Length: 276
Length: 276
Image (cartoon, rainbow over all chains, first blue to last red; front, top):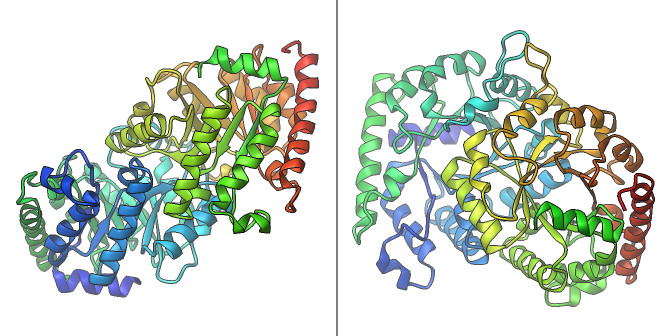
């Protein structure tokens, strides 16, 4: 999906919402455990309930890998289901991969060809040749970790060089030489709200994937105040706040309601800013 | 496996060799493609041929994930095979994971409990709470990326702070507050030969996992000259140079010969240094 399609979907739906499919077998409603593939059944119901209100889905691969073959199978079924039934959804594999060139090439093939996702999150630590193998796939995106939403983000991402430039800024500036804002996005945590104006100074046009709204405590309004571009430029993720809105038999309905509520807040902000 | 067991195996075998199981379906001998599980059959033959000469195996997960469910299945079969037939081998999941706390917890469970590997490689970019969930498993290890073997390692790992300290040194020093040398190792590429004396100044006792000997051009002698500790302190990985020593029907025999040759060089060095 290219940037024009993505922004059209955002405008049409009045939503920059990404639903994080961090599906944990220990947290899904009991009655689903009797089905043949509980993880997939859960995801399918969540997707059907939330699709009108979001523009993207982001399965975090850890949740699937931790179940081995069975989890991998549920992931493939989920991705295929979204792709076929909701072709306008932007699918992000939250994988945080990054390895030497020949290995990153394999990951790129795996995610962009075999699983056919639109984007993959990539960790920058190993530098250029660990990232560039993911580039050059038409309509596919790299989402590079820049300033993450967790507490430990301060350990290394904020280390400043002799000129005062923090590591995350090095990552954003250096990687902008590898790919432009039509092919690369950045992860910037909503918990870093006060940093968004700084981020926009560094990357005025890039789309940002913003986790950390909701369970992690980030503020949608603060993120939008400093982070929005003319064509939105933000994909805001919520995982636990939506998919575990209820753990009873009404889980899908509750997820739909939570997504709808967040979408309404987003639509209001997007209207105020003249984006939709 | 604890440090004492690992170093005993190194002394007994005169080897610090790790065989990298970077098994690529496109590179394995043709005749195996007729078997039911070519990747596993290849790995089993490689392991049987090389086990006398090495102390560790390191499957790079990208190679398995890129095949989806089938690859994940081959990985599980391979790990179980090594664990049961060669219980003295140290098994490293080369996964380069690293995510927010609750996700890293899942990865830790997946790799240490479900797959029962001895160690997992972890990327440091997200800081403390992305790494500590992997700690505290008895006899299990975190191997943190420090100074990698690829060209792109210079992009960020060598950025210096105002006091001249490079990022990789920050990673090693800060992470040493999270775990000691009985629970944490570091990845330092063999292509960084001249840096090993610097590395030993920072982490005098830590085991180092050293990729990049062979195909990537690193020198075993240079690595050992500066990198060896009293109990060895090095696990040196070779992947392509061993597992693709021949692509014919004699692939396993050739892999055994390549591993044996590398082991002989290692044994000579370890003897000279009085380690075995």
